[in-house]
Image (cartoon, rainbow, N blue to C red; front, side):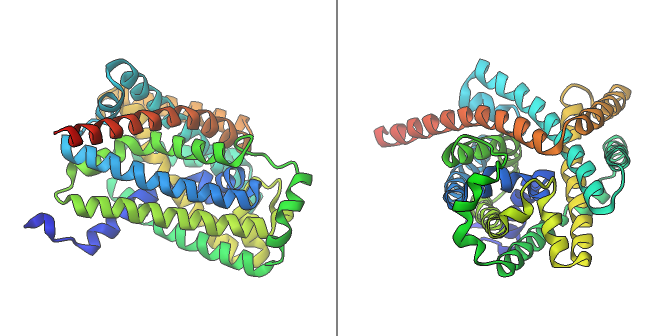
Length: 362
């Protein structure tokens, strides 16, 4: 009887968790959207449709698998889908990617404070690194829980920014495909379809353990699957709107490290100030679990080794995050890991086909 009762509030909570987990410096600053979608013009919007369809599939499959098999360890889902050895590779590779994603968060912080406030990126990145590491070490769970609500706020502000950007120069959408070839924009792949697959791939390496755990801890399968699908829709819609906003103003935002802030400043400086604060808060809420997972994977989360490793990883992350330009960090780390994640998608499809065949044969 409990399974038949679906709480809309819990569905929305699950959807919010899906969206918030995918929001970080790449999305909030606009670099992901530019490199994976807007840089391809209208075909980039087709890429977002591909992303939406695949998000529906992987989100549903991860939570259902987690619910049915009660996978509480993030590595369990990889071994279940890919076998002992390949699954073990994905388990450890995902931790490496998670740490590299933390580095991207640090790079995004430096780029944001420099572009919006004219502050040295070192000050912003070191400050963010210290706050994140302190949170991880002392377990300031309430702060993370409160600031975790910032995910929906980023989506609302980003969608608002995209709509205002489209209204600012709607004619730009008609000429975007003819303008782009002359701009030498940084892109995630040689074509829009491979870029969309790469995007889903790197998101999967974030989502696998998180979504399977969400399924394992849920008491209602309908709620968690509905939440995953609603989250996929909400996130994809936000991608499409901000991508269209950039496309309408592609010459203006081209080459910017933080295109969302450049666009926001052109609308109103006060809007840009508010948006920059939200961006930094969003980076913080994403960076904390990323650094925690990297440290806790190899140490006891309460030991002195855990604290030392957290500080060491933070310091390395700050150094690398500032030595490599932010747009290059997004381009190299996300794209390479995206193709590895795409291999995981193939294993998922094979596993789904086998499951359907077994049901048909039963």
